[in-house]
Length: 252
Image (tube, rainbow, N blue to C red; front, side, top):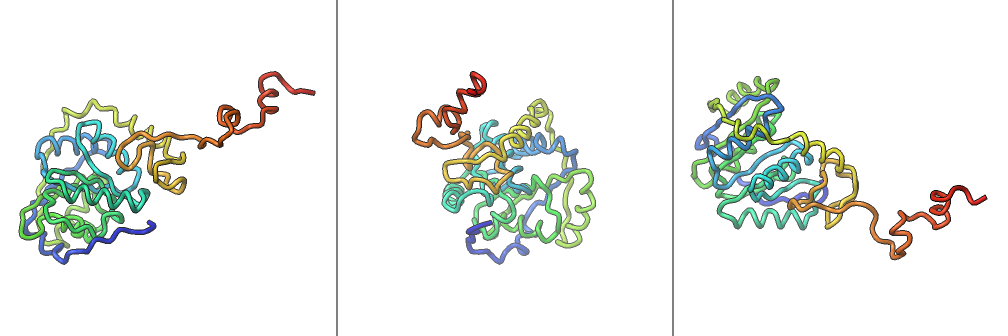
C-alpha cells in the first residue's frame, strides 16, 4: 500500500483483552452478510470497526451497509492518502460511527472510544486477533469483539483462546430478517466493474478489488475521459473513416 497511514500505535492491545467481551459465531459463507446485519440490529454498537480481509470485501460491505441505512466510512489501500485521512477524521469526530477497514489500512489507528470490533472476516492468526481487538476498550473502557467464523475456520477458536488466555463465547445471531437480500448481486457488480478505471481521486488500475463504488459509496462513472474532440468522444476515439466503414461497409 502506498503512503500507509500510521497514527500512533497504543501499547494497550494485550491489556485490553481482559476488559473485552469476546463473542463469536460459526456460519456458512453464504450467511456472513446477513449474520453481520443481524449482529448490528441486535447489539446496536455505538462506535464500531468492521474488519474485512480484502479491498473488494470492504467495498461490498460498504455498499450493503449504506443500503441498509448505515453511514460507514471505509479505509483500505486502494483509497488515496487524502481520502484515508478524511475517513479517519470523520470517524474520530463522530460519537456514533462505523469504520470498515482492512488489516493493513487500519494499522496504527488509535481511537479511544471504539465500542465494538467486528471481524467480518476472521483473522488467520491469533496475533492478528489481539491486534484487532486491542482497538476496543481503550483507557479502561469496556468493549466487545464479535467474530464471524466460517465452518472450516472453527479450529481457530481454540487457537485464539490458548494464545490470548481468554474464553470466546459462542452466540447465535438471528439473521432471518436479512436473509432475503440479494447479496450475490452486490458481489456480481463488484466483479463486473472491479477492473475498470475509476475517477475522483482513486487510483486507476492496480486495484481490482475496488468495485464500482467509491471510497464514500458514491457511484462512479467509467469509460474514457473527454478528449476535447466531440466526434472522437461520441464515437469512441476512432477516426471518422473507421466509423463510416463500420456503418456502411468497406470504402473500396
